Length: 467
Image (cartoon, rainbow, N blue to C red; front, side):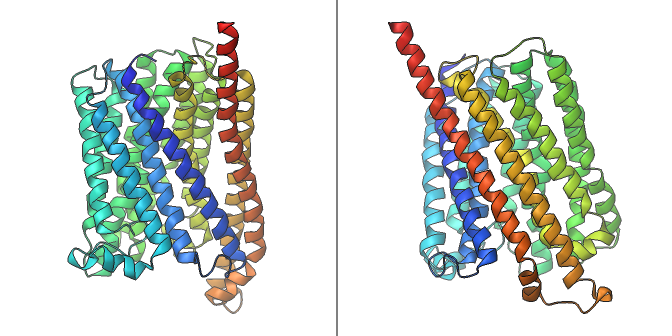
């Protein structure tokens, strides 16, 4: 490890993984509730479990991005972090706000939570993915501002690389677009129009810049390929991602009443979104093939290549399946949407965070060539368990979505069923989904186990060297 302040990343990564485990647990509970609606009731009803599941997803990924940035930026900028103290304060403020909010969802009815947090003074609650109380949203903004300031000042006084600048652009965009979560107009149409400024422009916009920067950093470290070569690929990928992603936001506008040209613009540009993800696959495998060093951290390379492939499948292929307006007319809000969301979030963002953790945690623990062979073998098992589990979940939800459309939205094929009657018919698919979710959970447990093995092996190695 080149700079002492890179150690700031460790608590961010550890807390991110704790929240990831929590997200998986609540995902399993929701999987049960799809089969048996009374599971967990009245202690954890479905609406509370869903809020916790989706909010944990967002928060743990933000912790992962922050940890990755604190590790990456000092090394890229060739200088210590501007303020390690500010980074520590930011961690504890964000952790406290996150835990308090999750406990609020679980222990207090949502309407009562809104009253307690004085939501009537500045109403921002009640919207999907943005359920956080206003006071929590303000805390998130303060955390983002201090974080971007710390990263920006570090880059400003150090080396300006393409990776650093792409990452900083993504982080600034993340903070700016979150401000739209405070805009809660009376018009539902207007609300949904700007709601996508947060949700879409995060996951199909600025987060892709963060993904590209992190992936490029790891590939440089584990392959030794020329920085200029990787940076050229990065430029092209993020340009395509932004062009297709920003205008492609129109594919969400099919249902909120804007002019008809959004049907065509949204369909055309969102149909191009698989292109940058396919380029990312070619990029990752080409760079690994042209590697100039045989780095000991083999599993970090596996995560990098896996990220590119799974992101292409989830965000690219499954996104394209139902993005065209004539198709989305039937599939909107069905289980096909859930299939796309699960695979895209895991492939594009969860995996790149775990890729950064797999590369950087051994370095922060003094193992510059990665964890022991035994630990990497266990981690590789976890990689495949999670990938197989998530693909199984995705295929089960895809089949459920297709059958849902046939039963509920195609009356010409027979009498259309109501929503709840359709859900009953989908139960076998939900059972299969839960089975694959258990495989995915086993992968998460194995992933954590690999780091325990690595630490024990490290202690044995240190003990042997002392003897």
